Image (tube, rainbow, N blue to C red; front, side, top):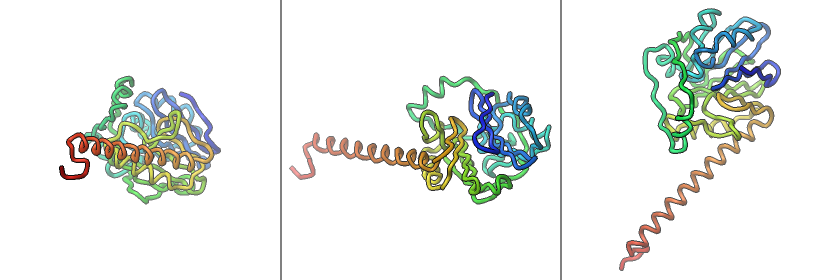
Length: 251
């Protein structure tokens, strides 16, 4: 595990797959996501305060894997979206992703991950709720990666935890392995409207400084790709019509 000081009060815990984040308020700590099921001991080694709460951005095993162990040992409150809670508790199955063509090879190259043990959820949140850390962290529903994915916006420090709604691997971009791409795109556009200086991601390097610009650039790239795809469909439709001898007129 690598430890990165993103900004005062915020550390990134980077794992071979994914990341978790520790936020400090005085002597209290908030952990956002927990890595896979084999990371609890590493996380505990860097706890230099009372682990007050664990916030889970979504149910995937690389985010919730060590939550049960850490919550039990430290008595931490576990917070997750109401739609994710049944999956995190082990009472329902999460929907699998609908892979884009380019994602198939990426998914195949990933190592198998240990299953996440069921974990209690003490507080179920929804869009607009506030979690009491960092001066008040607003819960933003960002469905598409999973139905109940959340981001956390801290207006005071101008900080955004995106979960897997956005990634920053080489560039800021839409996260991969989504259950509903259209909703995921809409969620990224929503995050791009925020005024944030720092953004941290479930996968990829933090953006510390001008994070809003990076998010807007990612949203703009999606718009351009959508326009290009629409134009390609129109051209193909026109060619198909011409090849049948219509060309927009009766013959």
